[in-house]
Image (cartoon, rainbow, N blue to C red):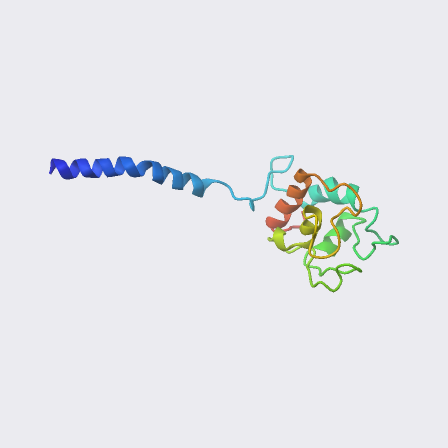
Length: 151
């Protein structure tokens, strides 16, 4: 009996590092979980609009502007123009892409156009300007992946 007890104890000691490693991997956060916002909560659309869309995009994407096919002139207009809405306009209108697919940033044209140098249609945004920062890209990604709520 002592030899079988030694085997069990030895096996347990050898397996412990593997079990701990697996547990650590499963408890780590994935890239799709929402990042905390400035106030410690999940990213909100208000934060996305105030931080990125309004200062960077709304002057070109508004009624009466050349890119008026996407209205980002106000927070309510922006939300209504983005979530669940098929792309329009000269570069993406026939692409079949959806501007924001709630819960899936990688399939959302908004995220693709701000994060990819060659999005599936059109050009990287802002057009002709410096791409938005990685933290602003993450803000958009996290909001979409968290369900793209109007909050």
